Image 1 (tube, rainbow, N blue to C red):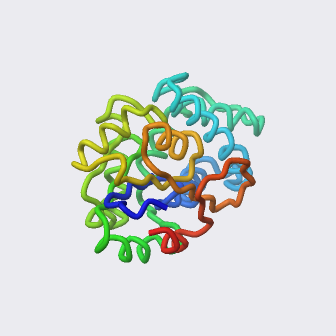
Image 2 (cartoon, rainbow, N blue to C red):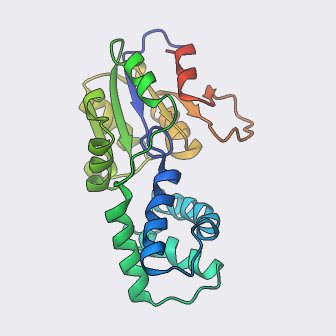
Length: 228
């Protein structure tokens, strides 16, 4: 482990901010208010893998922001054999973004580990999420005071795993890649992206998936104390 680390870069969604839990609560509100025939758990079972695949395509510039927002809903409803108009899909997409940051559950240990790290390192965020939404998450979850800089893909002009976003974040942080480490849940965007850009990385593997690569990894955020 590099003992010269001065700056730690965190992913936000699925790493600190519990996207799946908060997302499920947003959809549950929508369905309870307007689509009572849809069972939230049935929808979420389809939505999670579809959303992940849509985000993978978005990260690699295969689809646009608008296509991401529409496709992840359309394909989920199709998987449920639920007929819904295009107009209603767009309305749900808007309601979902509006409701998403009303709940701001964090992963277990998030605040404790940030409190542990902040006196020792400069902390930063690199996220592919949309700027206005991510800013609300950070504010509403009371995370802002922990981070020196926040880099999102809209500011950088590219998305993780593109090395340019890591260059942008390192420059914004006024540090060096040799003194930086990335922590995130996405093997492609966060881990390979950071390593290919010249940063060290730790994989947040909370779902305990089997990987063949010899990456540094943790299953719980408090395990970061073993490395940092």
